[in-house]
Amino acid sequence: MDGVSGREGPVFNPATGRQMRSVPLAAEADVESAIESARAAAAEWSRFSSAARSKLLFRFRNAVEENAAALASLVTEEHGKVMSDAHGEISRGLECIEYACNVGDLLSGSFSNQAASGVDVHSVRRPLGVVAGITPFNFPVMVPLWMIPNAVACGNAFILKPSEKAPSAALLLADLFYQAGFPDGVLNVVHGDRQAVGHLLEHPSIDAVSFVGSTPVARQIHRTASSHGKRVQALGGAKNHMIVLPDADIDLAADAAVSAGFGSAGQRCMAVSVVVAVGSSADRLVEAIAVRTGKISIGEGTAPDSEMGPLITLEHRDRVASYIGAAESDGARVVLDGRVASLPKDGFFLGCTLLDDVKPDMSVYVDEVFGPVLSVVRVDTYDDALALLRASPYGNGVALFTRDGGAARNFTDEVEVGMVGINVPIPVPVAHHSFGGWKDSLFGDTHMYGPEGIRFYTRGQVVTTRWLSPKSSSVDLGFPSGD
Image (cartoon, rainbow, N blue to C red; front, top):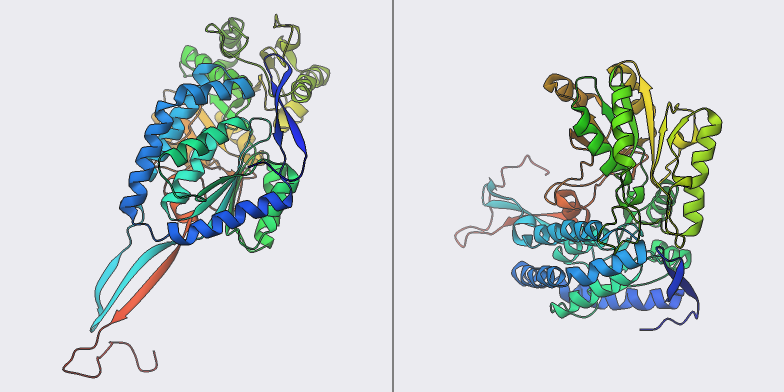
């Protein structure tokens, strides 16, 4: 339905720099309508059997798979990522739907027979009611699918507030959701900006909020929503390091650094932004990365030979480019400068940048750049690399490249990071594990999707039952007097 605010935001094709369409920005009245729709649906939906929910989720999963090409086209058109990246995020989203299809097992409780004489105890997971998700521009299909399947599988109604920069995929997802046969109101999409978000965070009928975005916004989301009595999982920013030990396979590490640093133009929270070259690995590694980076084909995401697309907006492109100049002024060596790369003349493009001799006090190291800028920090020892990680305020993802199994095992014990890869540059968990970082990469104590997602969207209930025998009027409960 159309909004009542009359406000609209522009939606650009970042590959051309031209506005394609406008997205309505919801007023409080629009958000209120979505909440009322969700509240009405939640009461009925929570009474559906787990088998019925699973059947609808299977239909939804099949509809998403059948329409993967249309979804990928929308992602590439509004985000700019190449088609292979767009299809990749849809595949990861499908995994999350598949996980939620097993709702009967996921919501199974426990039972204790004869906990005391004639007394049985069982536990169940109950839905919260109405829950909301606020999702970013960089994964307009995958991140909503981190949230929606688990939330509705648990019996909740869901309100999605997608990024206004890439809004169209959310509408297609909602259309496919209802084509699968879900009751009206179980999923609601609200387009908007801060005004819509603020109303969701403060409204008493919203029971929980999920968020993925930058650390400053995640911190504010958590503070505001929790102060209004809501359960909150707010995933923030990252500064993901990839540590390369002298014994590592340099070709493998270089391939990984390039794909993880420049894939999706660096616009993903699990992108490698810092390569920590330990000891004698440095010169060989920088040379190998530079050779590979120079061969990356940059262009419109729909072009079959494109390996990297544009950034999301002109302002973001210019912000990312400013870090290159700042790093050069601070003393870093610019091995490859994305500002002078051969690029399409239209659109929000920036070439791949490789910086060497980056120091921990430089802004390009400290800040989440969120673009195609890869920094190399040189250290002498493994302990120096570990100290860098421990000093970072972020704890999202980290990777270690080595042939030494003992070093790898010690590393997983010693790092303070939520997701660790060993010879794997982007350690995003599969759907039956959960996604989330530590420290300033997570506000709230629950990670996203997987088992922790099920716990987040439910609350536990324990039922203690006693049935009196017809031959007696009382039963010894086995508890001390007064209990």
